[in-house]
Image (cartoon, rainbow, N blue to C red; front, side, top):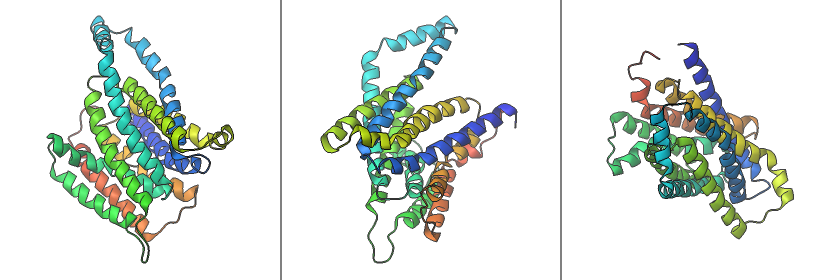
Length: 309
């Protein structure tokens, strides 16, 4: 492996770690403020944190060919399309993040990380509805993932199903919708601009909901400041930027594996920082879900490597 690919892999590993530990921040933050307040502020910070990257990329584009400049100009002539596209993405993001944030209040950070990760399996399954082809590895991955889902979320004897688990699973379904929407929109709109705009919409909807249904003060926001900053600046701004930079040079197989480790870091964060219990069921379920997520990426992981790999 060349040094460029190794550096990209390291950046992707850091990205997965940041995203995984974000589940811990999301739980800790809600000890002081409500889920919609937390989401509203963190997505606002996330949107703003991407503006320097957008400015840098725009400045860099000025040094490119006239053809690229013309294409950029052409894209800016469609403000209505940009408005509606980012509104759609931001709305689905708001729904998914809301279910997740509310659900995390009632489950562990580790379980939430792996339950959210099921979107990796759901994306190709949902894609069937819109005509995407689904191969055998997806079905094998789904089998392992849903077996892991059973171990993670099945109730203990004489107890009920954890409502937090259900909400996080529902959020994963919306994350899968979101991935498919972004996949289509990113072909027409600059990915970073799309990300910043959708975060802004999600923030707006979250803050409106918070004003209607939650109570918060400057003091409570300050108490949750560290988790908010981590969720907004690190999880969104830094990690998203690292992902964009790394995936330019990372072999697809490496990226598929490393980004699936988000749930592992969420599990480690919950155990180390929040002292969440480790049980045989949790470990078994987590391993099965990780195998399922990796199985869905079988074609990418075991595809013939290019010269750059």
